[in-house]
Length: 150
Length: 143
Image 1 (cartoon, rainbow over the protein chains, first blue to last red):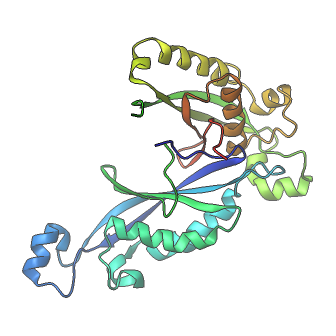
Image 2 (cartoon, each protein chain N blue to C red; image 1 turned 120 degrees about the vertical axis):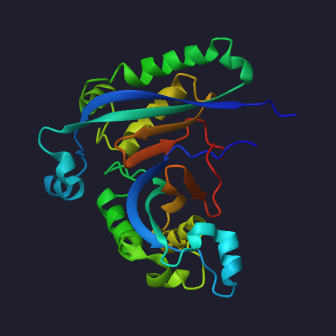
Image 3 (cartoon, one colour; image 1 turned 90 degrees about the vertical axis):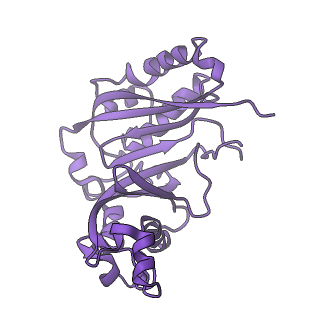
């Protein structure tokens, strides 16, 4: 399959941010035995924590005057409001409503981030990709409806 | 049956000076938009230029990859290494050498395309810092 191609004027800009959160893998409707069997030590009562790294990639045309897709100062404000404030130094199970009925796995956290960030970028800009590291050995990627760039 | 393709990314390091300033903006607009990035004397980065080659398996043993790697180094690294991007872009005829990551990746992509390498490079990334990177595709767009 031919890879996704950008038109000449379009550039992908990626910005990394870091947040530290606690989480616990637990489903209320399951028995204690089943939670422990499925989630192992990630089901421990008080949860545990990670230093997450989120890479946010925005697709857009390069403004001829500023040479930018988006001003990094503006992007940082969005990331602070939508990601850092609700997630950094929080217990995701207890402090983020989105996870009241969802296990805060890396997969669900990236979906939360997409839900929060995608509406912030309007035409001709758009959110292209998120990449979330839980630790250096484990990460997830999400493109929404976009095609991955080869 | 489609030809098998292998993707290999080679990273080059480019140490260069730049200063974010647009000749299409007023002094006040430049200061508001670029802030410390338009400091009077500029600053610099250890840019990482990541070039992803898309080649047939044979190209990895017939010397083609080595040739392309050398060409990329001549096109993107040698002309700019330990120099000022603003000065070098202006000398190339860039009308507004603002030297953002977006502009650097676009100019580098165009250099690869003009050298006939776009067919073999599927992805070009300019990492400005550990936190910022800029990506484009030197191939001609589908539409």
